[in-house]
Image 1 (cartoon, rainbow, N blue to C red):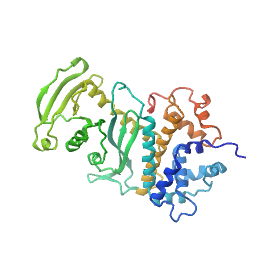
Image 2: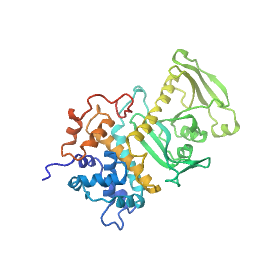
Image 3: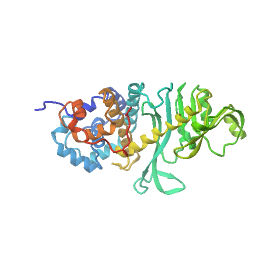
Length: 394
């Protein structure tokens, strides 16, 4: 007899059912479907993410071995890999994109009060960047990087990352040759927020839009930037601030795109032994605080490295664009779902990495999930190695 619920079903309790039904209905995902619904497709793919399955045949073999354990979670034990492959190829991937974005909004509310090292800083910090997931051009001929890289293929994840909450708040999946500056145009600018960009993402017209929305930006400037100085502030070389000045751009086209004053800060990083030049439209914060704001952009790089290491988004179960997008969005959904679970269970001292490792071996045990995740015999004898990326550790 079933004396309890599996850990897997308890994890799914944190996924609002109405969100899923609404997304499926929006794109008619279950139209003319008789036996393998979108919900069952999601369960199979979430199972594959949480248990680190490598292929469709791997999913099929493991699901058959589990037998009745899958039945109690809404799945039949006999899920042919061809059935799952057809679902991934034909079901609209937008279902899982909308589901992931809805969960992200829910997670933002839960994590809105969390702070990082900039505890004295009063403002929301966003970092924007993109990462490329490389694919095999032979298997994914539709994913050519660009005309100059005829032997490489890939797709790009454009992400707006909330630094304090350590959550992606905007994700867009495109071809690898889509420039990040085009995605900046789609961002909804939040008044009073700070947007951090890397040097390659400079787009003066978009920076002007951020300024007009009463928000702030910090971006690395190129050494070749042409400008003239209007005013210089006192600089503190002991803190690494070599230059702090107001400037106006000289190139006519640049001045048309951004006619107002900019603040230019040259900071010397003693750890890396290099100079960094920042541009910002904030004229009140200390120059060292501006440098610290840019330093927080590293959190999005950690996020990209983390999801590539711990989620199934580097080896794909299908080669069609729909299958690839489906797998990526379900991976993001699982990531955010576990982040929500972590916050609701108040597991502040348990890293997301540890939670995923425990779930991978206890997914079909019938024990309360809180006891599973807090029981000492499930935890590693030694802490995570120092080279493991840790998110949600405040």
